[in-house]
Length: 150
Image 1 (tube, rainbow, N blue to C red):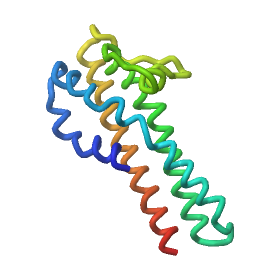
Image 2 (tube, rainbow, N blue to C red):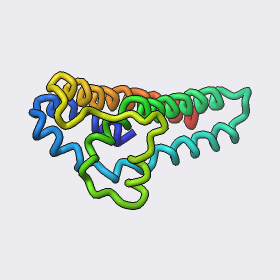
Image 3 (spheres, rainbow, N blue to C red):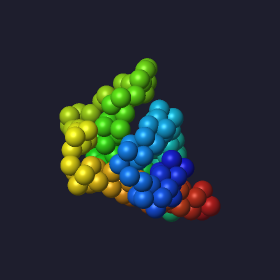
């Protein structure tokens, strides 16, 4: 939940940045934020398999897994194409390079010469996708805490 929440919390300040400053700060996040989400889904899936299907904990764990899958899906649909744009000039290697090069839909972010309106749409898409992801991560965390408490 931490990466998505961190991005969501910085939204008000980042929306005040001009294009040049915004683009400059985007590259500071990577590749550190590329690790972790998949492990959370795997761990939650293992918990789901271990839970008895007739228990309330099973249904809370299932809700948590669905929310995590939604968070992951939101990343690939909304965030990843814009990430590829922000990182086009970064010298990525290894896992980070492969991760950010991967996009089965072959989408791209705005061109460097894109209009300000197109660029603003892309940055808004990135920022608000993290708000959505933070809401889904919070939902997953809440459902999993309730499952453990039950």
